[in-house]
Amino acid sequence: MRNKPSLQNAYDLKSPDDNIKLYSVWAETYDISFIDDMQYELHFAVAEEFVLNGGKGLILDVGAGTGAVAEALLQKAKFCIEATDISKEMLKVADSKNIYKRSFFSDLTKEIPVNNSSNDGVVSSGTFTHGHVGPSSISELVRITKPGGLITISINEKHWISLNFESEVEKLSQYTRNYTLKKISIYGEQSMHDHKDDKAVILTIKV
Image (tube, rainbow, N blue to C red; front, side):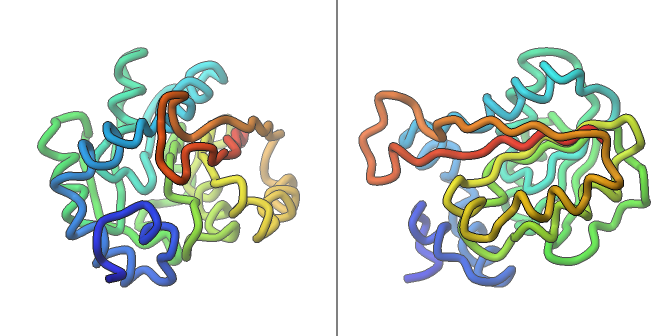
């Protein structure tokens, strides 16, 4: 079943509708059955890179899910964070944690309902993975970020390579100051599942 909660089914998503169906079922158990049980740690690395590079101000958490990145950021400092996601059920769980200034629905394959240069920072963990969200969506993140702002997102390494994300980032260089890449493990050292060795690229863009 395509909408049965599992990492493999998440990797197999082909459309926004597939995404909505899967995460509507997974939302209530996601923190335990995925983040805890599979030792998912990518959100900590995204938060760390954002802070190390001077991230501050009003932050938009894109593909916020149940709020893992926001929780990791708030462990480090006080931030004003907003959330957006394609799954209203995941946002409902995130909202219950009282960590966001506001949350709203959006589909990253279309335009985010936010004005140009609205945010000082953008973060995202686990949204740019195998599936329907490709490199073209990065330009939308640049659009909504203020000059001088910071974008820190993770991209599954195989997805990064297969869709040539770096080419898209290079195209955006006329609108940004610079960018850095860092490859890290997605899961903890003690994880034992089939994807335990998967890597991600953390992309940090200074706008």
